[in-house]
Amino acid sequence: MLDEFYRAICCEFDMAEKDIELCHPLVLAYLGDAVYEVFVRSMLVKREKLPVHMLHRRSVGLVKAKAQSDIVRRIIESLTEAEKDIVRRGRNAKSGTIPKNADVTEYKYATGFETLIGYLYLKRDYARLVQVMTMAVAGCEDYGGKAQISIKERDGLK
Image 1 (tube, rainbow, N blue to C red):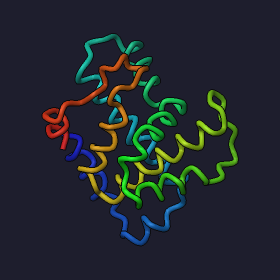
Image 2 (tube, helix red, strand yellow):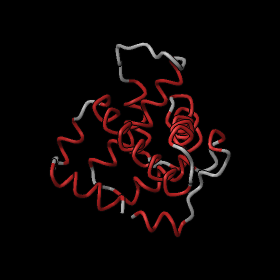
Image 3 (tube, rainbow, N blue to C red):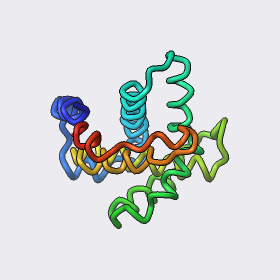
Image 4 (cartoon, one colour):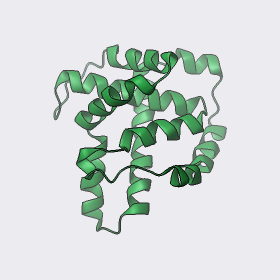
């Protein structure tokens, strides 16, 4: 389901491989932030029968800078060297903004995570994108540990 959605959007705004490689990390992070948000919201709506304000609170727990910083530190060893380089590029990008609700280090790691998500999305590597996002939400404390997506459910998202 999500695969079809991502594919339809990417086909509409196709980018050449070399253009993706040359994208500024903050542009990738900008896109990655939105892609991850859609993934988290879709997962919560599918799994939880809650009022909207509770869905929002749970999604914020997974998408805030601190959570994303913790995620990238937890999954970094599961990433390929190329993916680690993308995270590093995002982490080291100078944003020119000061985060309101996170310290600078958390913000930089969160930006690295979002950069990776944006990169995988633009490359149309949907299987890996869903795999990384599934690893990201697996066991997140802010979601009470219920965020793990089973292999069967993940394959249904492909």
